[in-house]
Image 1 (cartoon, rainbow, N blue to C red):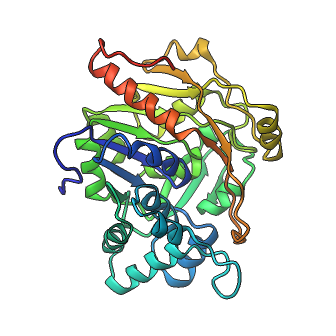
Image 2: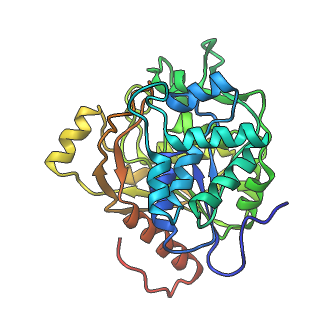
Image 3: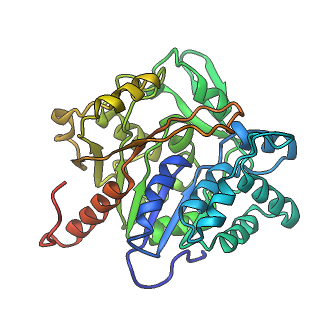
Length: 347
């Protein structure tokens, strides 16, 4: 297996999709240069979906966000995130187009990511979770109901309990060996916040990923979502989110679960209401019974403004974690777990 890390410093592997991973990577890169982002590969909405359908390439969108997060070049970072607001390319991010062109030119998505990493001067490594061209399937066997495609599932209002659904990839996906190495060799693994059924679940459902997480010696932490998702996880508490993560993995592997305990300002609450978003309830009486340790903190970030050029059909939350607060909490918890005498800050 390829070694995604260099020696010395804490080795951190972040597992997730685009926005959730972007938030964590943007701050964690200030704590270590030994960082790997293992990225979900089922996105088929927005700019990414158009490129997949028209050119038959692997989904570039989530990979682009992680590359940008780890970049040390502000101008190139802005270039990769630039979205055309008119003409043939309206709604497309330049970085998506470049990754697509590089894949078509080299015949390899891995090479495309490596080249883009050089252009962006990335500190760390971005690793597609699988290099297979797959689509997401969500199935309720008892109800004989099947949903196909990340975009369809993401926009759906579930008629049945998603906790009784099975997530799978079509065709069955093989894990990228470099992704498995990043899990195996990490000191700390962070499962980023994100949609349970269209971002985190599909990645954890890849053959070999769950097994790798069960076998690794790394400390595993999950950053719970800030808000519920309308029509899908309404009423889910912190423990419900963590339980689904462990269901996808196939075992009780979490060492820590981080959750937000901060109350939003009136302005933030108003913006949340516009998105039909409600803060995830902290069910402390359940959390104290779990194998993992649950830790609360003030993790609310600002609401991000929607980009005027982002006109292609795709759903995404504009609510974000405070990346610096989360990064500090993750590092302090890791140091405390490794050395109980570590003088950590109060969360």
